[in-house]
Image (cartoon, rainbow, N blue to C red; front, side, top):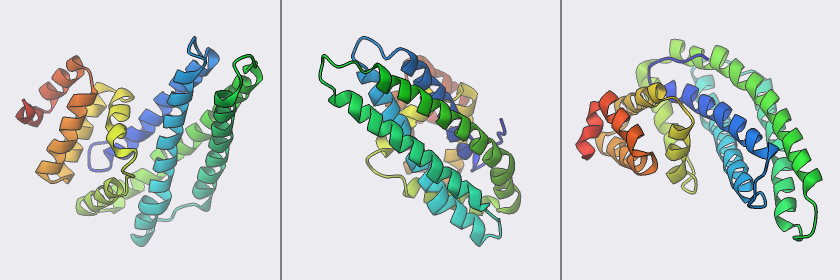
Length: 227
C-alpha cells in the first residue's frame, strides 16, 4: 500500500480503513449471526455511509481542488464512484428487505444477494483505490505545496456531514494499524488549530480501548495534555 507522511496521509489511511472494514463486513455476511442479522445490517449500513461520504468528498472537494491546481482527474474515476454507489444502493435495498421480512420468512436468498453484491463492490473498490493510491494522491503530494495540502485537508474536514462526523474517528482508528493511527494524529496536529486537534483527540480517547489510547500517547506525546 502507498503510504507517506504529510497532510494527505489521512487519504491513504481512509483507504486502508475502507479495505479492512469491507473485508470485515463480507466475513459477517457469511454467517449473519443469532440476532437475525441486526449486527450485519448495522455494520454494512455504516460502512456504506462512510463509503458514500468519502466518494462525495473526492468528487466534490478533492478532485475539483486538484483540477484547479493543474492535476488531471480521469473521467472514469467519477464513473467508478457512480457504479459503486449503484451496487451500494442494491445492498441497502436488500438490507431493508431483510429487516422488513416477517419472522417466519426465510431470508437466505436475500443474504446470498448481499454476499454477491459485497464481493462485486470489493473487487471494484480494490482496483479503484489502488489507482488513487498509486497515481492520484502521489500527484497531490508532488505538485501541491504543503500549505495547499493543508488547505485541502481542512476543506475535507469542513465538509464532513455532522450526522456521521462523531462516529468517523472511532471507525477509522478501529480499522487502521497503530503505526498509521499515530502518524495520522501527527498529520492532524500539523494541519489543525491546537484546540481543534485536542477536541478530535478527546473524541478518539472516548472511542478506543484503554490499551490503544496508552499506546497512542506513547507515540504522540501531545496527547498527554488530555490527562
